[in-house]
Amino acid sequence: MYIRVNKLIKLTIIFIALSVFSCKQNKNTSFNNSPVVITDDEINYVNKEAVRKERIQIDDFIRRYEWKMITTETGVSYWIYEKGNGAKTEKGNIVVLDYTITFLNGDTVYTSNIDGNKEFQLGKSNEVSGLEEALLVMHQGDKAKVIVPSFRAYGITGDFNKIAMRNTLVYDIYITKIY
Image (cartoon, rainbow, N blue to C red; front, side, top):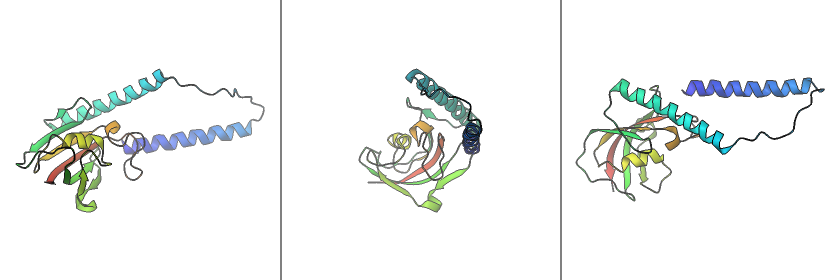
């Protein structure tokens, strides 16, 4: 998916460059200077289509790996594959996680083995909202797989580092501590 997005961005840049170059070459061409108007309905349609297609990809991924996931109303899917016996998480708790974040294609993006554990306060952090949603149903010691659709992760901007726009994230997490 990341490779396809990069190719799409490169093709878009090439198209724009060619358009600008061809405009400069043909000075006799007149252009209508009216702005292009995109309606709210058109924007909503495009967004709904993107969400629908992403959901299909997520569902195919879950079927392929035969994970027994629960999907929330907001589209976050989680599976607690090993139950812990610690306290339940609550908003305001500070949680410490061992984690690995991958894309649907299996490429690892971030991992606590390299980047260190995540430690943050639930409900008051800059962490992905889909991750926080899943954590709020978990207990200390739980190990879980969490799939966060792009619109509940980094959306159309990405994280300006390793995660490009509109990437679904797959977390493998272990809650090591809650306080």
